[in-house]
Image 1 (tube, helix red, strand yellow):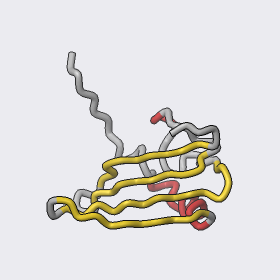
Image 2 (cartoon, helix red, strand yellow):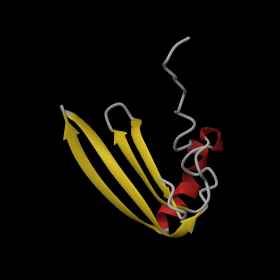
Image 3 (cartoon, one colour):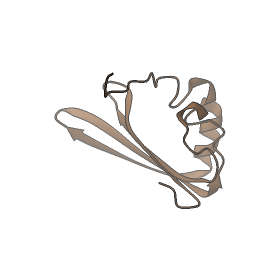
Image 4 (tube, one colour):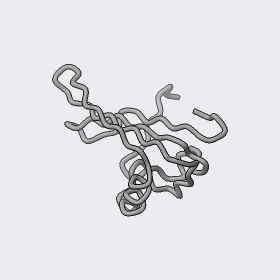
Length: 98
């Protein structure tokens, strides 16, 4: 048995069919972006802070990931712009879960 786990995330994070819903949520939030270059690779950091705890309804990730969807206060993504992948995602909920 392998000690490694691999899952296909391309449809689970930032689902294409939820782009309009995501845009609407982002328009109601505060967004900070930052660009970091590490070993000739550009990482775009995006932090989204919601004005009030928000129900995402799978706009940013599907429920199959077993991450909270309700009462989200912030989300952040580190995106590798060359490979077009999410390297890291963080979230916070109203009850303090991180």
